[in-house]
Image 1 (spheres, helix red, strand yellow):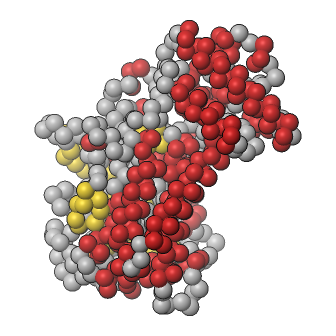
Image 2 (cartoon, rainbow, N blue to C red):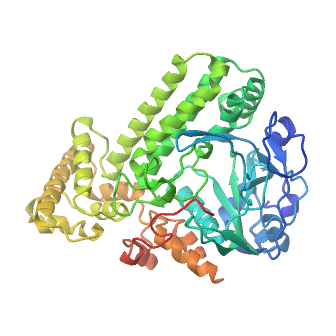
Image 3 (spheres, rainbow, N blue to C red):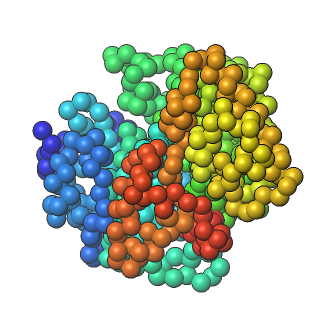
Length: 539
């Protein structure tokens, strides 16, 4: 039976089992010999529910009727605590843009507690934007509506795309204004504030281990790692196991490498760019975590990053994400090295990351092209030639693959170049010149021949090919300009577009003819508009 708010059961394992910060006052400081600090959300003047997600309530076994309970808004706006909640913020460190940044921690995230449902699952509820913590450094711990809408929508969009991610239960406006310098140009503005309730089995990051290792607190590193193995990786280890060996730590690290490789392949498959792949933004569960200046490829560009802070170095550009993830895993390996004291098996796990990513990437290339399996002898070159064609004319990746699914391999051999290109022409942002048209037509004919070969070998048909492609190539993604339009309306108090996008993004692979106008290239007005192209970390 679904539960009311007051019936939720909390089983706060981290608070119960891990050492707490001895200082009870909430002021910015370095925190040593502790995993977390107790901290209470900052009350707000006028919390009001903007949106909530029924599927996430189902994870908690929370009744959907709870959304209408005034207490729901008070709790998830930060004004009230439910019985059993033990709010806290965790300490962690991290490498930011390749450099060790020291202590970071939950600077504007407060964990309310771990809900335990009847299936024995633990779901941590975390408020983002609910006020300062000891880890807020020079910031205020708050969040503005624009960034909160983006996180709320993207968490759910990614889940329905099949990409591992944290979830979002609710989006609550605070009724207060927050001062933010969106462009870091010395012209701050007052913006409406909001709080997102994020939900995940755990929010543990690579940086949670890095901080203890960097401080040479090996005892706490081991204590926290053992806790992580028992709780978040219980499927890998017997329930009664309390002592862990080097082999256990290596098995755990290898699992993180595999999950991270699979996550990177998903990002690349759907054209998602995280924007801030610092080690403190990397989940040990292989989840997409911390939605800041993210974006989706519109014009295909391996070098594109949505993050203005990264505009020069482009460390976290789309094409570099798999390599950066490997670098981040190497930093985690360095952090847990004291528990293993051997380099070679850690390096072997990193090689397993490479192998798993390559396997997933090849599988996804085949699926995106509608092939029954990846043939390295042919398909490596076929995909490389496709990427070269993408450089000939600005091409919308999402629209291209959906259009390509309609190609009939039996017909195209009789088409003139222009007829071939017509199949995917709607995905181009500009007119195709004669040279590019020829190159595109050549590739399309080569692809059609490969499809015909695959039909013979696999017994697949054109219809099955279309279904295969449309199952992995989304029709609807959270394009930056769509998110910004929802934000603009929400800023005026109209939350209808947030709800509409949430509904569309629940079925990203379906045709949804009623929403066909959302399946469109980025309009020209959005090319350089704030929030529609690149974004800052300011939120």
